[in-house]
Length: 138
Image 1 (cartoon, helix red, strand yellow):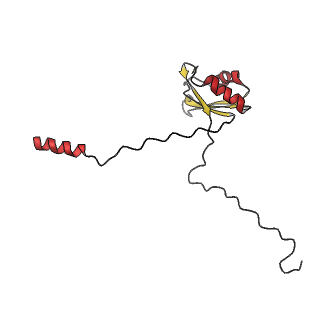
Image 2 (cartoon, rainbow, N blue to C red; image 1 turned 90 degrees about the horizontal axis):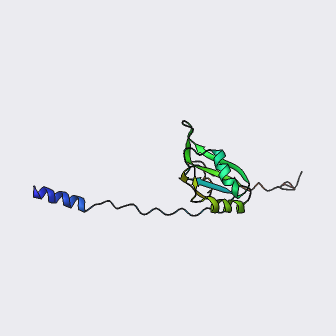
Image 3 (cartoon, rainbow, N blue to C red; image 1 turned 90 degrees about the vertical axis):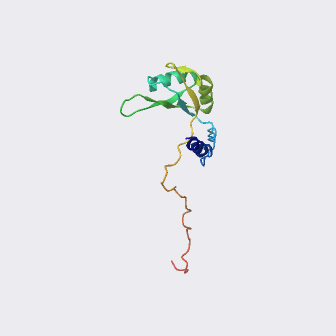
């Protein structure tokens, strides 16, 4: 029995598996008039989000992303301001504050990455325009 226990101890003490490397922090998004809001309550509506952020500038659009089936908030949304300065004020005024009983976080939105597996559009220069035909005849 002691030999079996020692064998298990040896088997599990020397592991071929190593822990995954720590996740690299995502780079901060460039300042833009669009904000990403996370930590939203299931009760938060787009109108409530607009009302909360309109204290800091002119809000063009406020949208809470909802589940298609239940219609409840997925916990995040987007707010678009008229200017980058107003967006900065919105972040300063609402990041870490309570909305509908939940602490929310506001940051600049990152642009959506291109879909995987789709070829990237390539910009090719237009063919050169020739004023004369190569043979000299027109």
